[in-house]
Image (cartoon, rainbow, N blue to C red; front, side, top):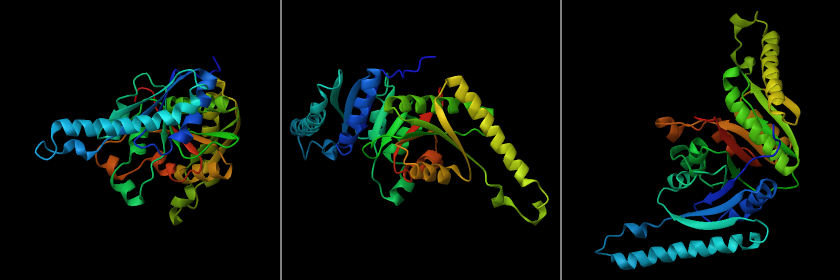
Length: 302
């Protein structure tokens, strides 16, 4: 199988200019390796568009909106100017959209990789209103890089797998394939982390006779076997596998931060209804705990 990542188009998108300056050199690295086209999308909106004609005539309102879009467009042009001679195909445009998540998701046809500068939200708002980052990691059909800070000299890409049983292998394959691609782009080490349940949390007086050491050994062996099979299948250059006891939302960011991983890649799932508004999944819980960048991958066809 080919070892070279196939990225034809990378989209950098945000509802503000903040963070785009950190995202651009990352897109340039991907373009240098894969030859992908790079587009920067600025999503802008102002409630001035909702003013009635009796207060703000339509012609004046349209002129004001065009002025806001022009200001955003000029800001994007200034940001990409230093990359015009470095990236073969780079462009920028503005999207007028009240709902940034819907706007960005509507622009992902043909996009292989989405880079989104992390949003800064208050904790309470994060719990009550699923922020833009969460909406994109849930629903984007392509991998999403949540860009948090400039990439240092890269030393490690960490792939977080859920290898408890074979039913997760399709998603695990997508995670590991994306992580392997990013490690090749960055020219750095690739390692795997997988969490398994802590039995000590469920021990009681009636269970003391159970063979907990044996059960843990079986859980580790199952995960080790599935990860090894996946690594061979994808020819992924994995240098080390970490099997950690405990909750994924705790163990994965702890290891990633301890090892200074420049990227952590993990799977995410779409949510609907009340859970979408209140409950964050594992990927969302990890976003705020990681010091480095995060790439989320959805199961193909989900």
